[in-house]
Image 1: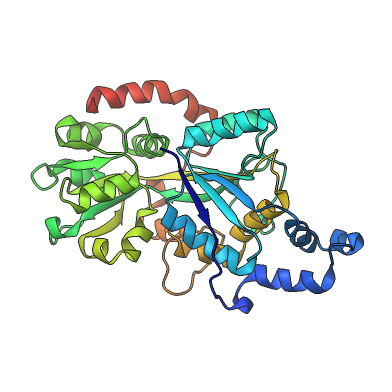
Image 2 (image 1 turned 120 degrees about the vertical axis):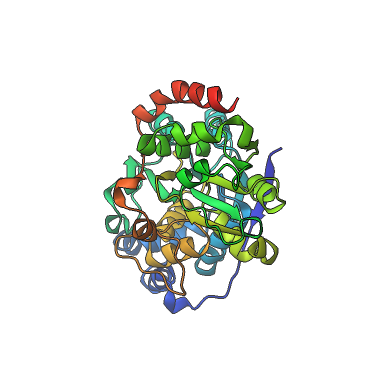
Amino acid sequence: MTIFRSRRRSAVVAAAALLAVALAAGAATAARPSSKHAQAENPIAGLIAKSKTESGLVVYGNPPSSNFNALVARFNANFPWIKVTEYDLEDPVIFSKYASEAGQGVRTADVLIASAPNMWVYAARQHYAMSFTPNGLARFPKFAKQYKGIYIMSPDPAIIVYNKLLLKDKVPNSLAEIAGDASTYDKLTGYSVDNLFGYTGLYGYVKLKGWSNLEKIGKSRYVPSGNVSAQLQVVSQGGAKAAYLTSPTARFRIASDSRLKTILDWAYVTDGEAIVPRGIAVTAKASSPASAKLFLDFIYSVPGQQAMCEAGFTAYMNKFKPTGGCTNTLADVYAHVAAKNVFNPGFTQAFVNARKSFAARWHSIFG
C-alpha cells in the first residue's frame, strides 16, 4: 500500500551555522522577486524568490520516514516556506509513476530519490532528469555525477544489523564470519535479490568475494523479510540473529529508538563492503523546479552533509568532518574497511545486464 506522508518542519537551528541560511540572507538583501538583474547576478537569490511563488516540493522517494523527516527538518530550518511532501514508494514505482504522470502532463514529482542503479540507467536514457548542477558539487568525488542531472545523494554501505542481546559478546564483522558459524548464526535475514537495494548489495559483495559465503548460509538459515523496517523487526524480536547487507538507514533508526537501541547494534561488512548508491535528480517535468534545486543545493553543501550524516544517510563531501560525533560518512567506511574490500557499482549498463543471471543464481540458493 502506498503511504502518503506530508512533512513540514520548522526546527530551530542556529542560522549562522548553516550555509544555506547565509545564502538566503545574502539573497534577501541582494535580490527581490521583481529584480531580474539582481537575480541573474545571484542565482541563489533567484531560486529563493522563485520558490516562494511555487506550490511546495513533491518527492517520490525510498528513504524511511524517520530518516527523511530528519533531513527535511534541517532543510526547512533554512527554507521554512517550502512545504515538502513525499510519497514513500518502492523503487520501480518511483519511476513508473513519474513516467505516467509526466506523459499525461499532470502534477508529478519535482525530485526522485531511489537506490536503483539499473532504473537510473533507464531514467537517463529517457531524459527524466532536468539538466541541473548543484552548487558545491565540485567538492565531491567524481562519481557523485552519474549522468546529466543525475547524482548520487548517498553512497550507502550495506551493513550488518544484529541482536546484541542474543549474541552477547559476539560482534559479526564480516559475512565470512557469519557464514562460517552456523551454530551461532543459525537464523539470518536480509534483502531478497528481487529488491533493488538487495540486488545491489548482494551484487557488490559477490563481485568482491564470490558466492561461497552466501551458499554456506543457504535456504535453511535464511528468514525471508521485506524492507529494512521489516528486517529490524525480525531481528529485534529474535526471529533472526542478524540481518546482512541491509540498509545503513537502520543506523539512525537504532540510535533514535530507545527500545531498539537496547537490543540492536550494527557493523560494517569488513570482508566485502558493498556500496548501494542512492540516486537523486530534479525531474524534467518539475512544477517547483526552484524549490527542487534549493533542496539539492542544500544536500551538496557543508550544512547539508551534516544533516545527511545526522539523518543516517552517508555524507561524502571531500575532507568533510562532521561535528557532534556523527560517523555516518564514506570516510568512516574506508577507515574501517580496506579500499580493496569496497565496491561501488555506479549506474552502469554492466550492472543492468548482470541482473537476470545473478537473480537466477541467488534463487537457486535461497529459493
